[in-house]
Image (tube, rainbow, N blue to C red; front, top):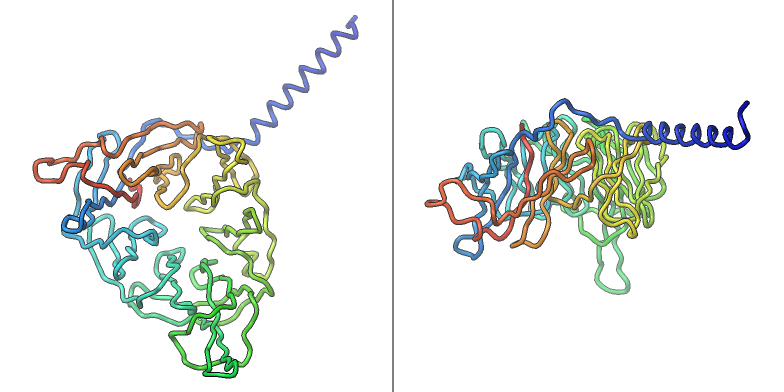
Length: 376
């Protein structure tokens, strides 16, 4: 006959077993059959000084840890944080001192006619179009034909204020693609002149958000700005007060705004290229660790802290993340596994040898780096 103490112990064991099963079920199922890191990283290195300040593109084949100069005649311009990649990682649009498209598989270089002062570049899901903002106006460019269409013109209003008239125009936040023909963006009251039309509108709308087609057809209008920050695949990230949330892009296209709050108030979250995974900061008291979230299931995993920023690249198979961080002359390359959350590589950029060092400046002379892409 079981005693009271024995029964309590059995119940406690069953409770702990159930908790472990639940915890295991809440971990994203990221598994791979091999443990070796493959592929190659493309980086841009910019040398110190004005005479030698032309950036060059380098290739780092993982496993060799030697930097190989590539396409040394490609005029990549000065490094710029607005450089964007096509969804398939084949093309990079280098957004600095002019706009160029670089084929990352062949090194082919093609200029893109974009007006000066353009901001917020973003590729369409298939990579056929590039949307950007020019002083309050949203433009969609067909990269095949190089033709540009005005999607939205910020409204303007003229104020005399008892003196010469001043035209105030609205501005546009980061546009995101819902599908290949549909864009969403926030529109704000501002004082930025339109470059497309010189006309004025008698009514300057308050802050709001719009969903439109690339032909300029209005699909939905929201009576407030939504805090749209980024969009990839089926997911849109929005900034909500002091925190972050995500929502379904397809729902926004139907006029439904239902943000799903994230347990993060830190630096911006990092969205995977397919829009299914998200990396978020914990509270400031849990420095050194971050959370990997599988958005459609809610499953989470704790991983080694990744230095989220512009210099981040996901591996082609989606199992690893590479990032560059640190001061310009003290850059470090970090790779973290999403399978077990561990850091599996940390390299000092100024200690990585350069192939053909007799003809290539020593790596120590390169003072600024940018991580461009992770290719197979």
